View 1 (cartoon, rainbow, N blue to C red):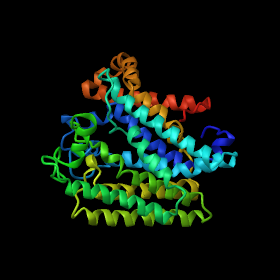
View 2 (cartoon, helix red, strand yellow):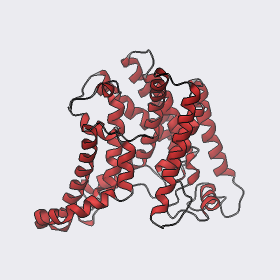
View 3 (cartoon, rainbow, N blue to C red):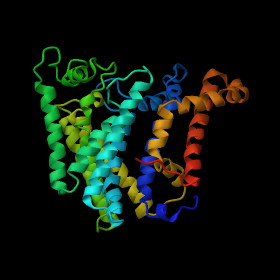
Length: 367
């Protein structure tokens, strides 16, 4: 592993790994790798089945890819108690910490909103993407961060209950079908804010129920910086995740699992998987001390905002254009599919190397 500077040695390596592998998968989408996995040539094979797991479910159900955004929002919550504790250790008071939190939420909202203005070349107000919704979930999580864990969990469940009731009993004709695509409260809210329903049926209102992910992350973060033993901590995380899975799947018999409108069953189930993933990473890396090779993904997790924005605003496409002639010249003999797969892997490797280059020079982009 590359030599780490003193400040990075104080980091929770399992959290950097968890965040890093999540971001690595996010940027892998921009490399077009997952699109090649579901090529017709692979239909009926394990590769095709694997590729399907890296695409969202069209409406009801759950694929692995549907967990990536919940993972990221949960991870942000985990980091919050640690980040603010460090600020206060350096002499910041609560008022200064609050100002930083409000500023960060505002910047995230502007960045998320701005991403929607790039393609049309005009100002549009949408916030279905990760950054814009994170601005809301981050702020809500911060506002209750100093409350007890019981209060935070109760508040998160209240958000889910409000969302559930709105979807089930919304009275506007044409949008009064609770869980039908394009005919529900979330679709109406999209029309209210943006003047149109999103073509993929992604609801802007998701920011409210998915705030539970960030709030639960805060609870997990408090646990990790608390006085309990490492063994006790990872077991509590695991139990919490298993309980959430049980409750979420039980609820799914009444409320379908739909990520695009963040139904309560989806939020609870994805929250459960988020807790379980953290428990496994923490147990393996920070309790068992299996840290060899972890840096490969950890360094991506140290610059998550940069690499997400870089890939999103066309950086991945630029890298692809640069590598395309060299890739075709070297691997063109493998055919269109083979050359496309190789090029996607090279683009992904190049974006990883950018994170590595920044890490070696101690350059970290933060809000």
